[in-house]
Each structure stands twice: as C-alpha cells, then as structure tokens.
Length: 264
Image (cartoon, rainbow, N blue to C red):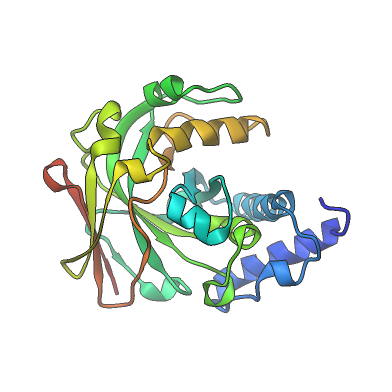
C-alpha cells in the first residue's frame, strides 16, 4: 500500500467493483478518489476481488495479459503489460450466443489462446520455457469490459478492475501453427462479417510468447504459478471494437482457423 492508502480504502474499492458486476452501474475512476493510488494498490484491489469470487465457489480458468501493444501502452502512459483473471463461467466457445446485457460497455479483441500443458512457476522463466509449456494454440476473443464509467481509465483503474476483463471466447479446434511462427500470423477482426481491423502476432510485445513468460515471472514473485490446464490470453492483435446486441464478432486467422461469437 502507498503511504496515503489504507486497507479500508482498498476493500471499499474492491466492494464497489464487485457491486458493479451485479448492478451493471459503473463507478467513477478510482484514481480520482484514492489519493496517491499506486500500481501495487491496484493489484491489491484486484486480488481482493479474486479471493471474494473464489470464496463464492467460482473456479479460476486462466489469466489474461493486457496492454501488450506499443500503441495502447503509449495511450495509457505505461511501459509494461498488466494482467487479470477469468473464471470458467466466463469462458464461451465458438458459435456462442452471449447476452450483451451481461456487460456494461463491452468491446472485443482478437487473440491467441494458449492452453498450458505444463505448470510455469516463476521467477526466472525464460522465453524457451514458456514456449515449451504451450500445449495447444486456439483462436480466441477477449470481451473486455470496464466497470469504470465511460472507459475513463488510467493504468491503476484498469488493473484494479481486473485488467478490464469481461469474458473469454475460445475455439474448439487448435490453430495449425507452431509456437515459433506466431509473430508472423495475421488475424482479422470482423464485426457482422465485415473486416474492421487487421494485425500481426508481432503486435503482441513483438512475440506473443513474451507476455506468457512475463506473466509467469510476475506471478511467480507472489508465489503464484500458472497451472497446467489453464488458458492464457497473451494480448490483442488489434485495437478493441465496441459491440452491441445483434452483432457478431469474428477472429479470422485465415487458413489457420477462426472463431465467431454473437451478442444477443
């Protein structure tokens, strides 16, 4: 905690965000209300929410890495990624019809989904160790959402708000691609069948495996492992696009495969 924040401040912020999931009413930016709020404070608020939901019986399915593109980092004035968590009840499959009303202000991002075949326990995980732990690579879409009003976020706001994670969609058939080819893979993001964005895997920190190693090491410093069987999303190929009920979103990896979800 920073010198100006208290445990009560952090718990109040966590409770506000937990309440926003239920009410679908966003909260004002936390940075404006917690004096001297630090990144450490923000992750503490995120962790309080994780423990709250685990205590309710929800099951951790994996982690997401955000802020992996240079453009997004520059937009928020940061120089490193962030991370969040998602539960099994937040994971949808290819072809899913997802109620748009379950979110406050959703947007979609095309990503890889790494299914881990080995546990990664940092610190000290290398790129090669991270790559070797990937069992299968799936097409994925992250539905990002913000419990902060009007997406008015800086780094501490999004970190506290579980890195703006809303839900995950993942394909059922792995992409036919090797780990060492990921940076050159192209993906298009389509809304209602129309290509709206395109990007290459190298947009994800120059190497989509790099966020996996980074995450394993950051969590490892806290005594937390990335477990075999978990799904890890390393970051988006493109900028995020808003979606509303009646629209579909497709992550199209060309001949490698695709993933489509619909919002109802």
